[in-house]
Structure formats: C-alpha cells, structure tokens
Length: 164
Image 1 (cartoon, rainbow, N blue to C red):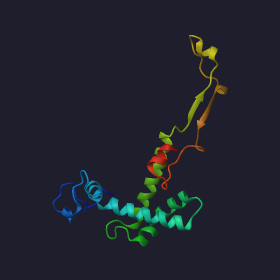
Image 2 (cartoon, rainbow, N blue to C red):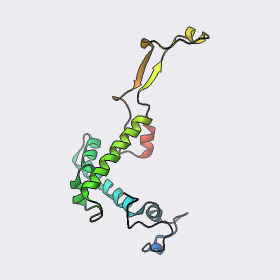
Image 3 (cartoon, one colour):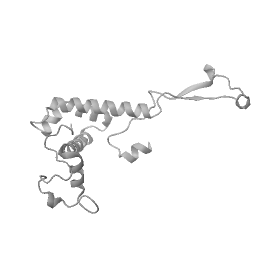
Image 4 (tube, rainbow, N blue to C red):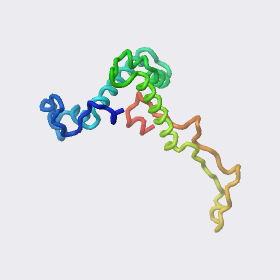
C-alpha cells in the first residue's frame, strides 16, 4: 500500500507541505517528519487507525482482545466508519490487505518461533560411543507445536513480544 501511495513524497522532496515547520529529522528534529519522509502519510494514517481500533476494543472487549482486533480490522466496516483513505483505497481492499498482513505475521512468528522443535534424549553411554545410533521413536518428543507456539500481541510493545 505504501508503494502505491501516489501522494507520498520521498525524503528531500521540496514539495512537502510545511516542511520548514517540521524541522530536521536528524538529531533533535521532529520525529513526525522522519516518519512521514520514510513511509509517507499512509503509514501515519494506518497507525492512527490501528490505535483507534485498539481503543474501541479496549472499551468493548475485555476477553480475547486479539481475536476481536483481528476480526475488526479484517472487515470493511471499520474503514468506512473511520473514513481511512477515502477515494484512494476501497475499504474492501484495506480489509483484505489487513487480513493478509495478520495471517503473514502469525505464520512468520510460527515459522521463526521454533514450531515443531524436537528434543532428542539419549543416554550418556550412547553419546560416548564413537558411533551415534539414530534416534528411536521413544527418544524424542516435540517441544513446540501448534498448541504452544508463540503469537505476538498487537496490544504489547515490540520489546514485550520479543521477551515473550
């Protein structure tokens, strides 16, 4: 979506409105300018929309907020209600892209979260032998499976997700 944003301006573009008011992005400058210059206005609008959806869910859904969030941003109604990018992207397209992004995020975390990690236990005597036998069926077990693989929480910070 960011690549197809016709109104996004590249870093250093002299046509950025009110650029002089934003200040330099290096050092003590305005961080909004840095975000805008790097990602365009679509990213900022989507970030604001996601924060609004989180606020709505925090008020209305105390249990299973993750499922409520996924459901909410995967449907066109929220994009119509919040009037996100009217005339540029249809609400159906935004909802579809959100559903794809959530699915990819979860799949990536599964793949890189040691899904189907197997532990192999072997006796010390067997390790000390010069030739290691292949593992027997009863000598290994799956440690991380579909039931306990980690999924990130949109309501947690990147640091918290990383720690978890």
